[in-house]
Image 1 (tube, helix red, strand yellow):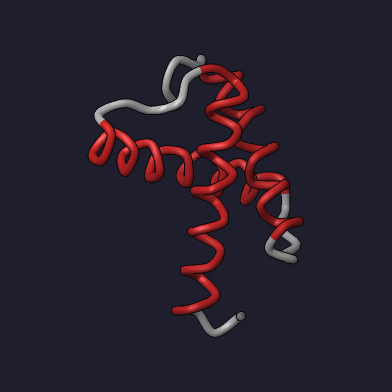
Image 2 (image 1 turned 90 degrees about the horizontal axis):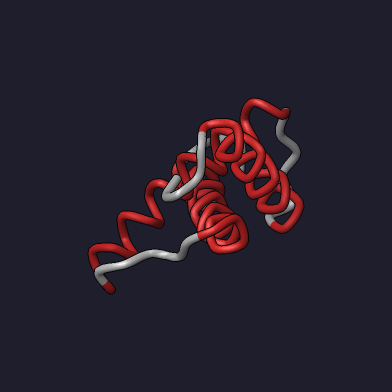
Length: 84
């Protein structure tokens, strides 16, 4: 995650994954929430950098990026997975 240390990335990633799970009506464990938040943030950061040449910084910016990225991951799993 851009500009955050490892510990902060775990906290923000877990929170973003948990919020995305609530928003998308999915129940995941703590580790999957952290994974979804961090991977979602990495993917959405890459998209933002590709399109705009920059990304959102700080805790709140990365929380938003992780939330959106995790929602996209959950939607992709629903679309392509059997557990939808």
